[in-house]
Structures are given as structure tokens and as C-alpha cells.
Image (tube, rainbow, N blue to C red; front, side, top):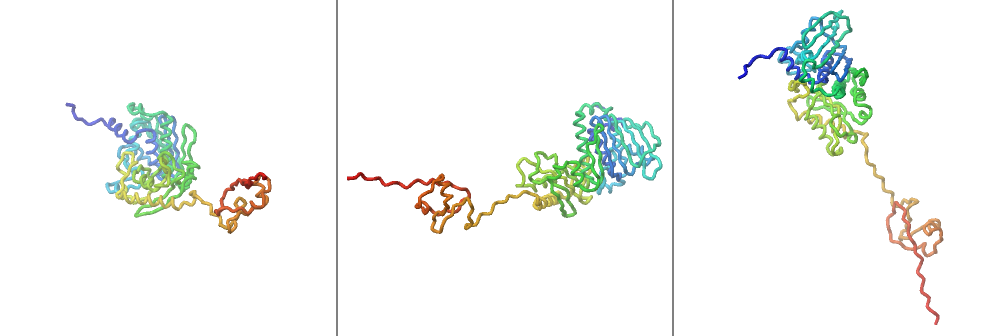
Length: 410
């Protein structure tokens, strides 16, 4: 029977890191959330080789004090909660205190940071979670995190990484979501030295939407605004004619946090009932603002899934907000039927009938019907059955009057 023993601290850190750091996109997500929680209004993300060889995240937030730099890389070290009661109303993106410790355990990390009140900053170098050096450094206010050689010491995880292009695309998707979740933050993204995204950071969701999703997608959306019981819904949804064949354009946010919510997704698609083509899905950028105590964000290691105290209220708030936006959209195409012409109106292509049901034509009209040959006088008063005016001209074939057979002379 195998003996029970406590794992080595390094092995335990690697296992814990595997829950938080799945791929380079996970690192970028955690570092961007820390930057936003630090009050930054400018965040720059740079990666090389899909993020496997280099990830650099720079912000102009409040920074880290020199005396707390080492503590920031310890497990369960955080400045965002203090007591158990703080878990009942979490208003920050990060709160567990595991991100930096998990990232440092599976990579080589360089930290450069200066707090706003400090004259000089601090520089740290770590490898596999072990501190190699710490010294003073001159730097601007804010924090720069450099992560190199991700999973260099965990080959079991390294062999499951995809191509650089696929990992880079996953990182880009994370950056886009963060840009949409906080339009007040200017986000810049560079991949292998090439800039691929820059948002203005003017606080307008529509500006971030244009920069992230593109002009064509943005023009196909309509604004959503609604409020319910202790909840507010705002954002943009695609018009029924602009729905796509995938749910990849659906972005849901709860109190500024990107989430995957089946309740919000079901409410969105139910609002489009009988308005979109079968097999098409609406796109959206919807922000739900709710009371902090009504949302539990501590149910998933990556914090992408949340629970609500009242799922029905969330469903109704999203459903009615989206439904009202679709019904009030003045840019939706509408079918316009032509008005029927009055009975006494005569158009050039219509035949004129008298009260007795007789045809009245001009000589020119008769010439056109008879191929240019003038018809006899008796055909001009030929009686026809009364019929309503017709929109399309009809050519009537007029046969000559039958001749009476001549009798042979006696």
C-alpha cells in the first residue's frame, strides 16, 4: 500500500499553476486584469511566438511598492480582499492572489514597477518561482511584467501547446474581450512587432466596438439600454439581418468581467424568436450591471463562470432590453406594398371602358393592335364583358367579320 505524504512545495506550485495557467492566453488575461484593477487607463500587450517565448504587459496603474514586490509572488497574496466578508461583494477582477505565483512557477519572470509616491522603482527577476535578484531601478509610474519561456520546466504541459498562430489568436481574443469590457482603458496589442489593435480609451463602448469588431460588424448593430430590479443592461446587439452562423460574436460581461453565461445567452436568442434566419445566431456586446452581492464569481478557477442569486431576473432583464431595442430599431428594412390605383384613374397602359362596358380607343391604339391597318367602324363599338383595369397591356387578336357565303345564281 503506498504511503501518504505531503507533496514537495515546488510540485504543489506546479499543480496549482496548472489550474490557473492553461496557455499563454491565461497569462495575458491575469496580467491585464491586474493592470485594470490597479487603475490603469493605458495597457500595452506584446507577445512573440504566440506568447510562448515572450509576453510583456505594461500599464500606468498605481504600481507596486518596493517592500511588497516579493510578497506579490507568494501564493494567496493579494491587496483586494481582507476578510471572509469581502467575498460577499467582490468588485475587482482578481482577488485570489494566485495569478503571479502560478505564472512565476512555470516561467521566467521580470518585474519592473514604481508606485506613484515612490521616487525610484523596483526590479525583480524570478525563475521557476525562485527569486534570483532584486534591486532599485528607474522607471515610470506603473508596472511592466515580462514572462519568458512559458512552461519551460513543465514538459507535460508544453507538449500540449498548439502552433504559435493558434496560441497567438487565443491571446488576441483575450485582449479584445478586455478592451470591450473596459472601454475607458486604451488597449494596444502587438504580435511579433506588428500592431494589431489600438482602442481609443474614451469610455465609449461604440468606439471600442469599432476598433475590436470592425466597421462592418459595428454598423450592423443597434444599441441596447434597459433596467430591471437592481440590474441594468447596456450594449449593442446585431440586427436580425446581420446575424452570423456562429456564436463567436457573443460577448457577455457582468460588472465589467467577461463571463460565459447560459442564462444571458438563452435570453438573447429568445429575444430574436421569429426574427432571424434558422441556423443564424445574433452577435452582441452586452454589459450587465448588478448588485455585487447578487453575483458569485468564486465558482471557477479562471473566473469565467458566475452564479446569480436570481437567474430569472437576469433572464428577464436581458430579454426585455434586447426585445425593446429590436422593436424600436428604425433602421430595420420594411416591406412597402404599392398602393392600388383608384378605379377612375386611367394610365396609358390600361384599356378605357365606358359605363356600358364598351371599349374606347384612339385611332393610334387601333393601328397598333391591327398592325398599322385601320379597322372598320363596327369594331370600334364592339361590346366586351366588363372587367376591372389591368396593370399590364394585353394584345387582343381581332378576327375579321365572317363573310356570308354567296349563293349561286339560279
